[in-house]
Amino acid sequence: MDYKICKDMWSKARGLMFSRKKNLVFIFDKEKRISLHMFFVFFPIDVLFLDKDKRIVEIKRNFRPFSFYTSKNKARYVVELVEENNYKIGDKVKF
View 1 (cartoon, rainbow, N blue to C red):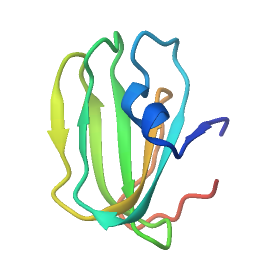
View 2: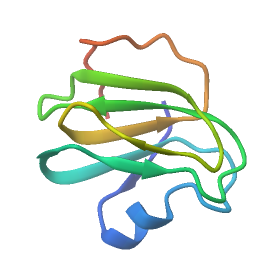
View 3: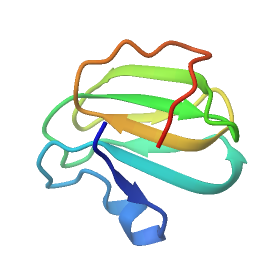
């Protein structure tokens, strides 16, 4: 999987806004509930919420343009995928 890492505040805030399709990985300092938006993103994505061990604790499929979502579980990493995938809760993601 090709992806871009987003660690700093600016890259996290910008995300996929006004962007072409690409996979992103967001890295946070600690596990917490994470809020995401799809403002000015013009295509749906799947979002994986990962714990500190990079295991999937939650999946938001078909996250639609111009919508908002807050994770139900705490996560340390978020992976935004533009391609179809077969990930499921409990899977470990490598990046």
